[in-house]
Image 1 (cartoon, rainbow, N blue to C red):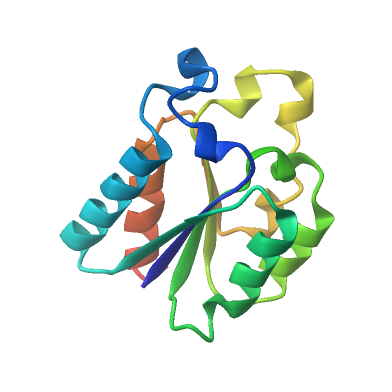
Image 2: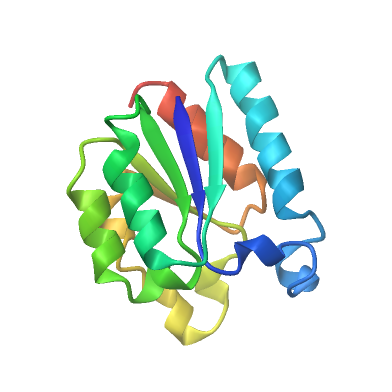
Length: 142
């Protein structure tokens, strides 16, 4: 089982800066993740929150709930949330950080990820496909 977590403002996919994030909605993304999970032979649970504490709770609970890996797009929390970093580091599951846009080609503050160093990998700039690639990596048992 794979847990897909989306952080702050990702509920606005499709309407927030579509030239950067595309026109697909969060619902579209979740439908894609579930379909990709079926293709990969794993169940997928998608969750989104604008609240840091809720994301922390889901990460803390993931292992005990039977998940085998986490795909996370932390949104803006990527750049400053040491609490999120510590939650990822403090649990045993592999985590892949995903960003829809190429954060390194954007504003300077987006170039720093405090969470990437405790993730198994980071995918950036490949649109929604980044989620599928992260799920493929996690299902290969790496």
